[in-house]
Length: 618
Image (tube, rainbow, N blue to C red):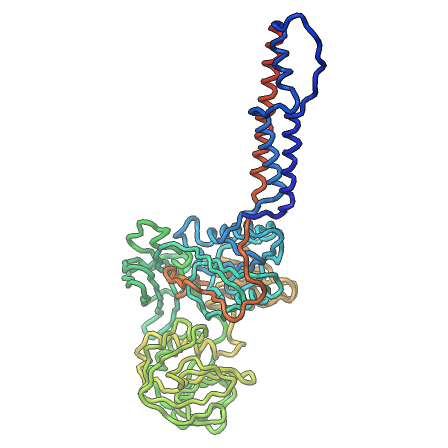
């Protein structure tokens, strides 16, 4: 314990004159009397008030000294240090990702994390500043830097439910920028330590991690996609189970009408898929997963938002696609399952006709590349994408974790008998590779998008993988011209989506899943309030323009069992002074004690006066 104002302890010397008041009493005038028998009480009072008499025990004096001691200590402002609260200024990073909605600690991880932030702010040292950052899909500064705890508390109260995948990397960059303007900063992350998209760089400041989590399991709908094939409409649902193996029930509704329900087996700590056929046509598809044996729902199924998933059909004109070069029945089958495509075939060696939106060129390139977006399969050498040779017996060893082209497509089990050795230009990004050999690349140059696979589907086991139709669907969504792509489709929680602006007096309105409507103001062409899971409707006046949907399920956020004990690290030279432990002033209990003793002393003194009065009366 220490004192904020230690000089105030000097006021303790006031106890000296207080004691002297009990030693130095006024001297009474002496007078002769005929007898002392009637003056015994008076003699006792005279003896008690004699100057420089030996100090006898006096309860009132002890109480007055206690009052003085309590007030002096209160004026010195005692400070109790705590190793749990860092000293200096604070940069608080609050995890607002979807996994923080887990209910394994009451009422949720998120609410517990907010309370922990409040404790850190309340216990900070006097005059210390605090900054609060949300570490969600789009990190942002919520409050501060400020010395006013009320500002931080109001920012916490304004936070809605957590959603989406956290972006700890960008949150750490923001924290570093803010900490550079503070004194003795300490960066504190309050969260559940779940998986991150990208490992954050070490910070040049002291860092701490406050874990807020319990022991739980969870099952989730990770993705939903529908395709129209030869056998009719087919629905593919990807499920995740993070805990022990269990059974569940998957129900399917189309336009709010229940059409099917199937039993599913959920393997322990893994993902699985369910294919549903002969799906009725309709605008909105919803699936809902319930699990058996959930004796404690808040623990056995910690998240509720990812128990459901949605899909809406794409709208707008189909994209014209020309498939040229070598024949690939696997690719043709996968393309037939992608909605919004009008696919035509050109025989090998035939001239490439203009006018298509996307050209898929399998194992050959024309002398003059057509205008339009390109998907190249096992391409020969060209100025667009140089090829330096050919390799045999390759397997995918690494793939990008944050590219939309590989969303829900795991290529790490894919092997290729032979593949071209691509030498992608700087404007292309390597999305999958075998060691240092690129196998899947994509990029955009001068407004044209190009994706290239180093091998033909027939030269690999990719067509036999579940990821193949998903990869083809992702590639086609990427390569569709922007004029064909609409707001319809899957949107990540927290993403900003384009909407048509209000025009000619007809407002553009976005209706959220909870029924709340937001009007696009003026020339605004974006909508960012996509935290809720469900289906959103875009209307022009009363006319439905399009729909898009947000699913809460995610392999990162639905896995509430995953944990990283050190998600944020300190590296390099620590800037500024070494952090000190903060403390909390404890002067108010002393003031309360002094007040209580004062009341007790007044009561005892009053009682003694009443007793003396009764004796005189007697």
